[in-house]
Length: 412
Image 1 (tube, helix red, strand yellow):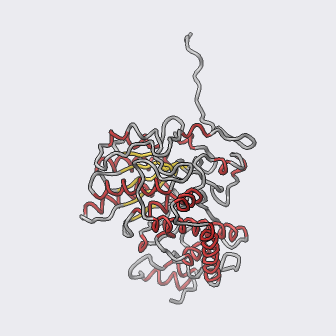
Image 2 (image 1 turned 135 degrees about the horizontal axis):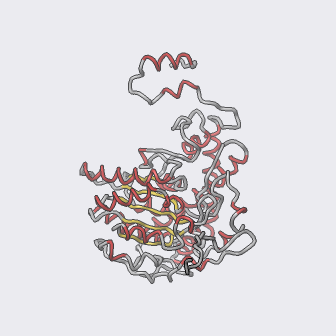
Image 3 (image 1 turned 30 degrees about the horizontal axis):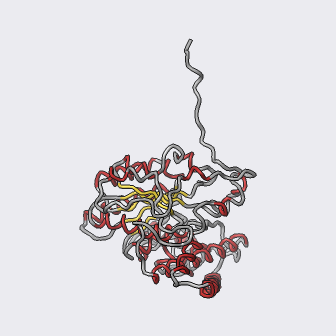
């Protein structure tokens, strides 16, 4: 007979459920300006004291404080705010289009706009991003045409990917936006490999990898960390901790026992934990990580603390597993409102300009939508010609595929 009690398993549970307000004390929020800024050439192990803290720049009044203040030009911050407003307007309009059955599927980045856009403005235009399906803000910040994004969603005759990807799985080599993979861990590995190749070729471009908190439980995440650390790949490893995977709390992926940033240090990678709803903190941390990569100092893992304001996708009903008003109560607030408050405080933004910009971005999105829908939508019964499946497969089409295309009704 054993003198020990029966063995038990621990199953993490969120601190809030439908009908019960969330206790956000688990987040470990540091005061703005309280976390030290290590030198860029810091040894990875020397970041172990800050991976449980939270890098923040903006205080509750909207002032930029502390060592991480990037001293950003107000013009750059205004550009970032407009890009966030445009991305949010685009998301809202496309969500409605999906409900109208013009699109089969959609995924918003509501509440997470700062992480993608802030980092995009910290990188060089030719650095390669390996995004998830919630980094559409990178494309917006880099000037990718909204019409092309919408045509991909509608899978119409002007779809740049010719109907070969799910909606929101964008791809643009010219804009440094690697093809989105639904299996998020895959992109993390690809980004590290691309960064290694850039170094092997003696190039100057770095990679930016993105993953969600839920996907850190996949083997690809750990494989990517191993290769990045061993070969000191010039890559930024971004973990977007928006608190929820499709229906499971971030604790299921291991976020309850330790921060995700801790995993970077444990693998020999310099790591930070950053307020992802603080645009200035995103800009500062991204610049810091990018400089490490460019100076051959190795990878940096950044855990961005943010919140998924909407559903996981249009196929998800978050009211089944979290409080309906949870986003409004999230202690790190709304990234758009926080940057707006800061710009107003320094005299670089006004209520009048905000109202005017909201109208401008809404008109821009509506104009793009009219143009995109003129090329067809799911509701209009648009179907790609079956012969297009043979395009872009071989440089020179083999004879047997030529025959098959002819049998499929293709005439080209």
